[in-house]
Image (cartoon, rainbow, N blue to C red):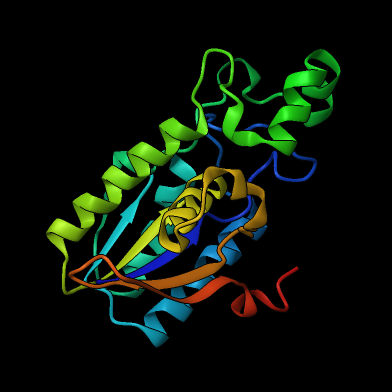
Length: 205
C-alpha cells in the first residue's frame, strides 16, 4: 500500500498561530490555490485509487480538489480528525503561554506528557490515527491512497511510519498542502520517500 499524505490548505489561525483543532475554518484564497496545486501534482504523478480526508471542512475542501483532479470521490475517515485542544481551542499561543505557562512550556519541550484541558493527549491522537491507518490497510492493501489530514495528525502518522516515539513530535514539520509519501508492505515494513515536500507550491502568493 502506498500512502500520499498531505495537509489541508492555508486557513485563518496559522499565521499568527492559534490552537485550531476542531474549529471549522474555510480555506483562505491562498489555501484554495494550494489545494489546486497539490491536486494537480498528485493527478500528474500518481494514480490513486482512493482519497480519504479528516471530517473537518478544510480537509474535505482540499480533498475534493484532489479527488476531482484524479476522477475520484473523497471519503471521510474519522480517525484522522484534528487534535482536540479542548479549552485551548482557538486561543493564540501567546494567550495560552500567559495563562498556563508551565503546561505550555511542557507542550513545547515534552509534548507526550500533556493532556489538553477538556481535550486529548498525543497518546489519544496516536491511537486513533493508527486505527485509521489499519482500516486503510485492510481496505486498500495493494492500492495507492491519498490521505488529507492536519499538522498534528500527519506528525502522528509519520511518527508511526518512522517508528519514533511521541517525544519526537516537534522534529517533524508539515506545511499546508505539503506532500509526504510512504509505502507499507504486507509485513508492515515502511519505506518513506517524501516528507514535507512543497515544490509544487513555488510561486504562489
